[in-house]
Image 1 (cartoon, rainbow, N blue to C red):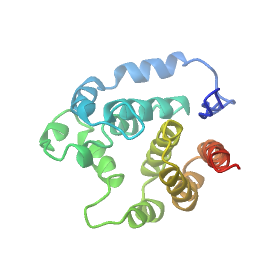
Image 2 (cartoon, helix red, strand yellow):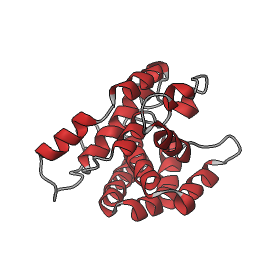
Image 3 (tube, one colour):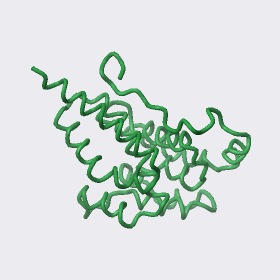
Image 4 (spheres, rainbow, N blue to C red):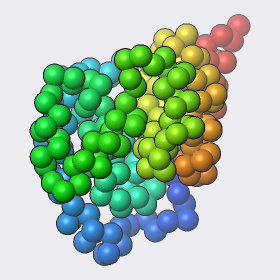
Length: 203
Protein backbone atom coordinates (compact mmCIF):
# COMPACT_ATOMS: atom_id res chain seq x y z
CA UNK A 1 0.00 0.00 0.00
CA UNK A 2 1.15 3.56 -0.62
CA UNK A 3 0.87 6.39 1.90
CA UNK A 4 -2.72 7.06 0.86
CA UNK A 5 -3.80 3.45 1.31
CA UNK A 6 -3.89 2.66 -2.40
CA UNK A 7 -2.71 -0.77 -3.54
CA UNK A 8 0.72 -1.00 -5.06
CA UNK A 9 1.06 -3.25 -8.07
CA UNK A 10 2.54 -6.58 -6.89
CA UNK A 11 5.13 -8.33 -9.03
CA UNK A 12 2.95 -10.13 -11.54
CA UNK A 13 5.21 -12.97 -12.56
CA UNK A 14 8.51 -13.07 -10.69
CA UNK A 15 9.65 -16.18 -12.57
CA UNK A 16 9.81 -14.24 -15.86
CA UNK A 17 12.82 -12.23 -17.00
CA UNK A 18 12.54 -8.53 -16.18
CA UNK A 19 13.24 -7.45 -19.76
CA UNK A 20 11.71 -8.43 -23.08
CA UNK A 21 13.61 -11.10 -25.00
CA UNK A 22 14.88 -10.35 -28.50
CA UNK A 23 12.51 -12.93 -30.00
CA UNK A 24 9.53 -11.35 -28.24
CA UNK A 25 10.57 -7.89 -29.43
CA UNK A 26 10.72 -9.14 -33.03
CA UNK A 27 7.29 -10.75 -32.74
CA UNK A 28 5.82 -7.58 -31.25
CA UNK A 29 7.45 -5.45 -33.94
CA UNK A 30 5.79 -7.52 -36.66
CA UNK A 31 2.30 -7.05 -35.22
CA UNK A 32 -0.01 -4.57 -36.91
CA UNK A 33 -0.90 -2.78 -33.67
CA UNK A 34 -0.96 0.89 -34.67
CA UNK A 35 -4.36 0.82 -36.46
CA UNK A 36 -5.97 -0.83 -33.42
CA UNK A 37 -4.47 1.79 -31.12
CA UNK A 38 -5.75 4.50 -33.45
CA UNK A 39 -9.28 3.08 -33.25
CA UNK A 40 -9.06 2.91 -29.47
CA UNK A 41 -8.39 6.65 -29.25
CA UNK A 42 -12.13 7.25 -29.69
CA UNK A 43 -12.34 6.15 -26.05
CA UNK A 44 -10.26 9.09 -24.84
CA UNK A 45 -13.50 10.99 -24.24
CA UNK A 46 -15.01 8.19 -22.12
CA UNK A 47 -14.22 9.03 -18.51
CA UNK A 48 -13.75 6.35 -15.85
CA UNK A 49 -15.21 6.39 -12.35
CA UNK A 50 -11.72 6.11 -10.84
CA UNK A 51 -10.28 8.85 -13.06
CA UNK A 52 -8.58 8.77 -16.43
CA UNK A 53 -10.40 7.48 -19.45
CA UNK A 54 -11.26 4.25 -21.23
CA UNK A 55 -8.41 4.59 -23.74
CA UNK A 56 -5.88 4.44 -20.91
CA UNK A 57 -7.62 1.34 -19.57
CA UNK A 58 -7.25 -0.42 -22.94
CA UNK A 59 -3.51 0.29 -22.97
CA UNK A 60 -3.16 -0.74 -19.33
CA UNK A 61 -4.84 -4.09 -20.05
CA UNK A 62 -2.48 -4.55 -23.01
CA UNK A 63 0.51 -3.82 -20.74
CA UNK A 64 -0.68 -6.28 -18.10
CA UNK A 65 -0.84 -9.04 -20.71
CA UNK A 66 2.70 -8.26 -21.82
CA UNK A 67 3.80 -8.20 -18.19
CA UNK A 68 2.55 -11.78 -17.96
CA UNK A 69 4.47 -12.78 -21.07
CA UNK A 70 1.60 -12.94 -23.56
CA UNK A 71 2.97 -12.13 -27.02
CA UNK A 72 -0.13 -13.33 -28.88
CA UNK A 73 -1.07 -10.93 -31.66
CA UNK A 74 -4.83 -11.61 -31.59
CA UNK A 75 -4.94 -11.32 -27.79
CA UNK A 76 -2.93 -8.10 -27.69
CA UNK A 77 -4.88 -6.47 -30.51
CA UNK A 78 -8.14 -7.37 -28.80
CA UNK A 79 -6.87 -5.93 -25.51
CA UNK A 80 -6.27 -2.58 -27.19
CA UNK A 81 -9.92 -2.37 -28.30
CA UNK A 82 -11.68 -4.70 -25.85
CA UNK A 83 -14.21 -2.06 -24.68
CA UNK A 84 -14.78 -0.50 -28.08
CA UNK A 85 -18.00 -2.33 -28.98
CA UNK A 86 -19.59 -1.58 -25.61
CA UNK A 87 -18.37 1.97 -25.07
CA UNK A 88 -18.33 3.25 -28.67
CA UNK A 89 -21.35 1.49 -30.24
CA UNK A 90 -21.52 4.18 -32.90
CA UNK A 91 -18.26 2.91 -34.41
CA UNK A 92 -18.76 0.99 -37.66
CA UNK A 93 -17.51 -2.55 -37.03
CA UNK A 94 -16.15 -2.65 -40.58
CA UNK A 95 -13.41 -0.30 -39.40
CA UNK A 96 -12.18 -3.17 -37.23
CA UNK A 97 -12.75 -5.96 -39.76
CA UNK A 98 -10.83 -4.25 -42.56
CA UNK A 99 -7.58 -3.68 -40.63
CA UNK A 100 -5.67 -6.86 -41.35
CA UNK A 101 -5.88 -10.64 -41.79
CA UNK A 102 -6.44 -11.17 -38.05
CA UNK A 103 -9.24 -8.65 -37.72
CA UNK A 104 -12.03 -11.23 -37.76
CA UNK A 105 -10.42 -13.22 -34.93
CA UNK A 106 -9.73 -10.03 -33.00
CA UNK A 107 -13.33 -8.88 -33.39
CA UNK A 108 -14.70 -12.26 -32.28
CA UNK A 109 -12.53 -12.15 -29.17
CA UNK A 110 -13.73 -8.62 -28.39
CA UNK A 111 -17.33 -9.85 -28.69
CA UNK A 112 -16.59 -12.70 -26.28
CA UNK A 113 -15.61 -10.23 -23.56
CA UNK A 114 -18.36 -7.71 -24.36
CA UNK A 115 -21.49 -7.74 -22.23
CA UNK A 116 -24.58 -8.23 -24.35
CA UNK A 117 -27.54 -5.92 -23.85
CA UNK A 118 -29.72 -8.83 -22.70
CA UNK A 119 -27.20 -10.03 -20.09
CA UNK A 120 -26.97 -9.15 -16.44
CA UNK A 121 -23.42 -8.73 -15.11
CA UNK A 122 -23.69 -12.14 -13.45
CA UNK A 123 -24.84 -13.78 -16.68
CA UNK A 124 -22.05 -12.07 -18.61
CA UNK A 125 -19.28 -13.26 -16.31
CA UNK A 126 -20.78 -16.74 -16.03
CA UNK A 127 -20.84 -17.00 -19.83
CA UNK A 128 -17.14 -16.18 -20.02
CA UNK A 129 -16.35 -18.69 -17.28
CA UNK A 130 -18.35 -21.53 -18.82
CA UNK A 131 -17.97 -20.90 -22.53
CA UNK A 132 -15.11 -18.44 -22.99
CA UNK A 133 -12.13 -19.37 -25.14
CA UNK A 134 -8.70 -19.55 -23.47
CA UNK A 135 -7.92 -16.11 -24.88
CA UNK A 136 -11.18 -14.68 -23.51
CA UNK A 137 -10.42 -16.04 -20.03
CA UNK A 138 -6.96 -14.46 -20.06
CA UNK A 139 -8.20 -11.14 -21.45
CA UNK A 140 -10.98 -10.89 -18.87
CA UNK A 141 -8.50 -11.64 -16.09
CA UNK A 142 -6.13 -8.89 -17.28
CA UNK A 143 -9.07 -6.51 -17.65
CA UNK A 144 -10.13 -7.14 -14.06
CA UNK A 145 -6.58 -6.69 -12.74
CA UNK A 146 -6.56 -3.25 -14.38
CA UNK A 147 -9.97 -2.45 -12.92
CA UNK A 148 -8.97 -3.61 -9.44
CA UNK A 149 -5.86 -1.42 -9.51
CA UNK A 150 -8.03 1.56 -10.52
CA UNK A 151 -10.41 0.70 -7.68
CA UNK A 152 -7.66 1.87 -5.33
CA UNK A 153 -8.54 5.43 -6.34
CA UNK A 154 -12.28 5.04 -5.64
CA UNK A 155 -13.65 6.17 -2.27
CA UNK A 156 -17.24 4.95 -2.77
CA UNK A 157 -17.18 2.18 -0.17
CA UNK A 158 -20.43 0.56 -1.32
CA UNK A 159 -19.09 0.30 -4.85
CA UNK A 160 -15.74 -1.05 -3.66
CA UNK A 161 -17.49 -3.73 -1.59
CA UNK A 162 -19.77 -4.78 -4.47
CA UNK A 163 -16.85 -4.91 -6.88
CA UNK A 164 -14.75 -7.02 -4.52
CA UNK A 165 -17.67 -9.39 -3.96
CA UNK A 166 -18.19 -9.69 -7.71
CA UNK A 167 -14.50 -10.30 -8.32
CA UNK A 168 -14.31 -13.05 -5.70
CA UNK A 169 -17.49 -14.78 -6.84
CA UNK A 170 -17.17 -14.57 -10.61
CA UNK A 171 -13.69 -13.45 -11.70
CA UNK A 172 -11.56 -15.56 -9.38
CA UNK A 173 -12.86 -18.73 -11.11
CA UNK A 174 -12.14 -17.19 -14.53
CA UNK A 175 -8.57 -16.35 -13.51
CA UNK A 176 -8.16 -19.78 -11.94
CA UNK A 177 -8.83 -21.31 -15.36
CA UNK A 178 -6.77 -18.72 -17.23
CA UNK A 179 -3.58 -18.17 -15.24
CA UNK A 180 -2.90 -19.06 -11.60
CA UNK A 181 -0.49 -16.14 -11.20
CA UNK A 182 -3.14 -13.69 -12.41
CA UNK A 183 -5.47 -15.22 -9.83
CA UNK A 184 -2.87 -14.65 -7.11
CA UNK A 185 -2.58 -10.99 -8.11
CA UNK A 186 -6.36 -10.57 -8.06
CA UNK A 187 -6.53 -12.18 -4.61
CA UNK A 188 -3.90 -9.71 -3.37
CA UNK A 189 -5.68 -6.74 -4.93
CA UNK A 190 -9.03 -7.71 -3.40
CA UNK A 191 -7.32 -8.13 -0.02
CA UNK A 192 -5.96 -4.58 -0.19
CA UNK A 193 -9.42 -3.22 -0.93
CA UNK A 194 -10.94 -5.28 1.90
CA UNK A 195 -8.30 -3.76 4.14
CA UNK A 196 -9.28 -0.28 2.96
CA UNK A 197 -12.94 -1.00 3.76
CA UNK A 198 -12.05 -2.28 7.22
CA UNK A 199 -10.14 0.94 7.97
CA UNK A 200 -13.02 3.06 6.73
CA UNK A 201 -15.33 1.54 9.32
CA UNK A 202 -12.91 1.43 12.26
CA UNK A 203 -14.26 3.16 15.33
